Length: 344
Image 1 (cartoon, rainbow, N blue to C red):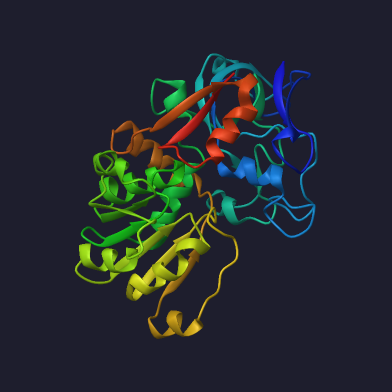
Image 2 (cartoon, helix red, strand yellow):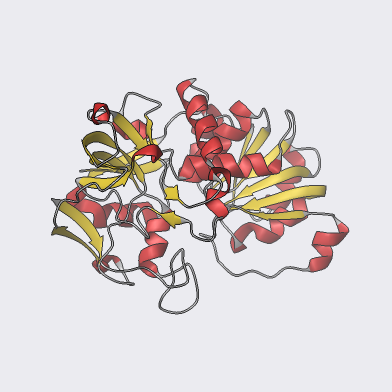
């Protein structure tokens, strides 16, 4: 089969499309013919070694074992089953829950032995992939492409909003609102939890589209007076921040939060290291929360919201598997609205 493999830490040249052996499902596993696989920042950072200091940096301290096939937002058809899996599952159209661990299923995202498909296991930048049968769920939508945009971005977004404990009528600022996680954060916060959303984007030409997703106000991070604009549109400090940018908007985020406000981050595309004046945090009683991925219950709730039409897929562009390198370049350019999807 064809697979786009990361051969080692480095630039785009480390992502190569190769002919590899098709995997065979083992006990309690299924073989999935991949129909769509959305791209996430995690695949970029895994290749670049951006998850930690030093050359070996992945989700786990020991780093990634190369070559590795990335890709975690996977949909496809079950075409073969391993032992102890009912053969009636062959033919199912499924979406993959992207992580596994021992212990309590609801602690899977914070378990010490958490493993992630596309990092510790070969993922969906390929024509076929194997994965535990119990982590393959029915697709929430009939389209493979549309169903492939939620597993990582949507799961991350849902868990972020859950941690904020948003109440209807509260105001939350969403940074990187045009991206994969950000565009879902806007929808989840507004359409499911009933919050007012201030969407932060680069290009205000996206204003109408962001409001269609549920944003109440749309502002540009390029503005020299962004902090005051946020306070003005909300008539005062805001309740919470959903952040995927990091350093670039960190100080503004803390400054516009009300006393007792919450800041939740799941990314750092605008800088991984920042400066914090602790006085800002403790004098305003601000809660700083780190978040990535989520629980199976988060995933179930997300799929329910998707099937009910409350959260909709936003796809910017699709690429064939052979153009995985070009797809990552396009994704990293940061001018997308929604997800970029590979089609094996």
